[in-house]
Image 1 (cartoon, helix red, strand yellow):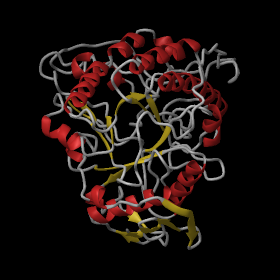
Image 2: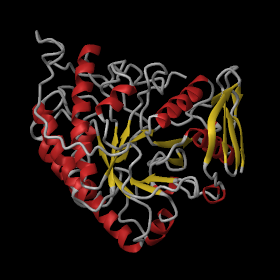
Image 3: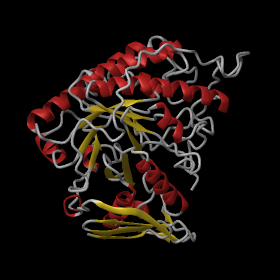
Length: 461
């Protein structure tokens, strides 16, 4: 499959629809990177950082993880029409971890001011965290969303930062919605001449501004911050997001890792937890998806930069398809486990396609169709053979809501398997067979195996 999509971002214009992925459109030149005599190295500034490294174990989390005694389920969604309802919070309370997706409160003022969450999405998310913790003080940890790529008008502080366009890459692609919407919907008639929205982390001023935004989250009631699109620009091999050369993307990535070292340290020192969502993989394994597949530095560079700073890695496209891609994802997750990096996964379910978007394809080229339970359990089996302490699994229906595309609350159910599948402690190492396609793991309560070549699996617990 030659797919070029990242985290399902449904953009509603009028009734704003974010289609799965980075919406690849016609582009404008990035003058800093094309018509310039500067070298790629000179484009990256040296910034003085004030870092207080927590020097904690990599599996540290500001809560207790018991995923071997209760399946570690993830809720990662938004309620676009307002505050979380009592029934929604009751459902969320069953999960082991909750993340509020950025479409939270998207339509609250659509017919009045036209502003997404009243123009203060950060404040709206904080209110949901407060409400949930008041209703369920012993409920799961709840994190909030921030993009590691763009700044948007739905966040008041980011709207203020957008006024200084020098902080951002001079490339207009995919920025109109983040800057104008919801300020340009018919009800408001608002227009702006701002063009750019993707942070240029090679600039000290941009890194300082981004750091200040995350420091605000570190002082709130949230349990942490989910960083989406964490390395999308740096790994953009087809130049869909910018015209940067690979050397420039490497400099960008190095600067970004320095930034994450600072902001992740600040979060952890404030008792908050960072989750890094990336498509990156270890150099000997390779990119984890068929797009954003030219990371200038492998995942080992992330581990080196963030040494002593606990964080989890989010895998947005878990078991996106069968065969080599699925096996590669498991191998990469196992190497992360060996290095003490918790794994967060979201498995996207496309019922109209039999599970995988555009259909699941076995290693031999033939097709395979899953029911929802089969696809859920296949993904759970792949996760169980891969997971280490601090890991969580999420699953959503990407086609049951045309506007939400898998990210609204309606798409995230709490499945009975989350209560019945209990592994107990792992025993021994994961066994790999069948030419690297089958992974088997023994637990105190039984055995789990998954065959990536044909999508078969067993959860015998």
